[in-house]
Length: 372
Image 1 (cartoon, rainbow, N blue to C red):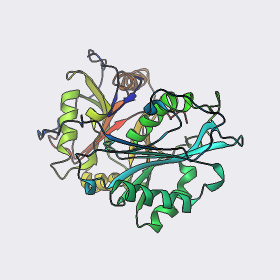
Image 2: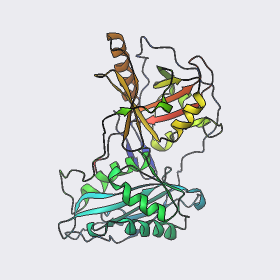
Image 3: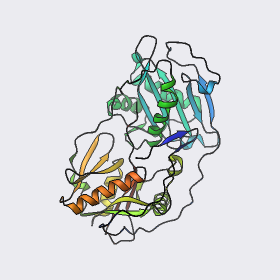
Image 4: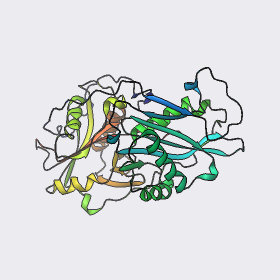
C-alpha cells in the first residue's frame, strides 16, 4: 500500500503512475452520470500557530533552536481565512502515547482537528486525570480559545474510549460518532509519531499502543443492508473524482473524501476499483447505508466473501461468492488494484448495473492503523 504523509497544511502521497487494467473477466464498469463541480482549492495560507508549555513534565530539559521544532510543545491552529462557524464537525483522539513523564508513567494526549485541517489542537495530560470531565473541559477550552462554536458532531475511532468520549460529548450537546472515517486525524497521528513522539525526550522505543484498534470477527449482515446483485467494477480516477464531487450538489446518498487535502495523486486514466450493488429498493438501501459510517471493503480470499467495515468495531460479511480459480483471480486482482491506488476504492448502489444513475456513492480509503 502506498504510504501517506503529512506536512504543514496538506497530507500527501507519492504520485501514483497510471497502469493498464488488470481485470480480465469482470462485468463492465458501472455507468454513472456525472455532475461536474469545481471544488475550492486547498488551503494554502499558513495557519496561525499558538503554543503553550506542556502540561506534563518531561524527564529532561530539551534544547531547541526553533520553538516550532520543540516536540514537547502543544499546538493550537486555526485558519484565519475560514468562518469559525463553519467548523461544525471535529475529529478527536484521546489516548496514551509512547512517552513517559518524570513519574515513569505514560503520557496521554488529546488531538483534535477538522477534516480540512483548518483546526488543529494538541494537549498532553498525565495519566491520573483521564476522565470525561477532563475531556469535556478541554473541548470547551478549545472552543473558547479559538473563538469557534462547539461542534455539532465529533468523530472518534477508538472503541475503548467510547464511554468517556460519549459522556463528555452528550453533556455538551454534541453528537458523538464512532467512525474510522477520521482520515485527516489518522494521517496526522502517523506524522506526529515521526516528527513529535519519536523526538520527545520521554519516548519509549518499541512501546506498543495501549489501546489497539479492533479487528473484530465479521458478523452476519443485517437484513436491511442486503442487495440483490453485486459486481467488481472499475472507473477512471477522473470519473471517481467527479462522482465524489457531485455528492455536494445532488441528493445522492454517500460520502466523499477531500482528495486534494489527502494528497492522493493518481493519473486521471488510472482505473480505481469499486463494488457495485444493485437492488429494486436501492434508495432505502442507500439510506440505511448512509448512517453506518462505511470505511472500507475488503475481500477474504480464503472464505470467498467480501467484508464491509463500518463504524469503529463492526465488520459484516457483505457478500459471498463460489470459490473457483476465476473468482479467486478476480478478487485478487481487485485487491491488487486497490493497493496500486493507495487503498482508494468505492461503493456504488444502483437500481440496475446498466443504469446511468447512482443513488448511493461512497469513496473509501484503506489505511493501516496508526502507530500510537
